[in-house]
Length: 227
Image (cartoon, rainbow, N blue to C red):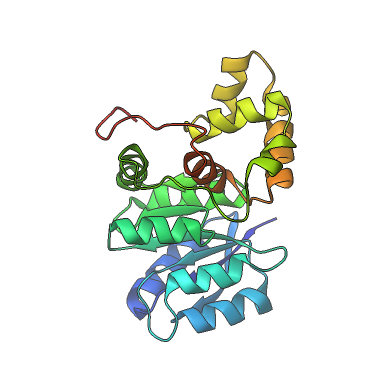
């Protein structure tokens, strides 16, 4: 079954280009296009896409606000933010708004298509520059502070294995790498990840990473470290 994709960008030529590229893939179908955040919010509800490719800077309602509304709904689609502007505020705000990924518009087409497929599975994808910024932000101590909606009581509900996997996810390891690290199967890792997401009320690995940093459960490598 084809992935249903909604493309959102206020520049018609850019939007059409992305839509044509995505629609040309056998496993993807562009179900709609929107030129602003307000239209994106409406179409996301009407068309029920699997993934929304979202621009940031748009009239009426920007991509960050639209992402927050869309991901706040039940059975929400995944949102992949795609922007020209590699700014700290965009990276952090997009991820905290519920985006499952952040890529720059100059990304290679194959990487964009891969990113759509990745976030559709519930995984996350970040541009290398965005990853460096996120890690640098928390390594400097600027990102510390407990989230108001998730705290020690929720963490206490996790098993020891789930807490261990939480820290490994926050370190950037994928399921295969975690399985190798712990000497368990990939299927077992997936079960643990799904269970901790459910217990903590989180959508994906990006939010797990942010939570782990916020609560001081893990510390990133210093800025400039190998990723």
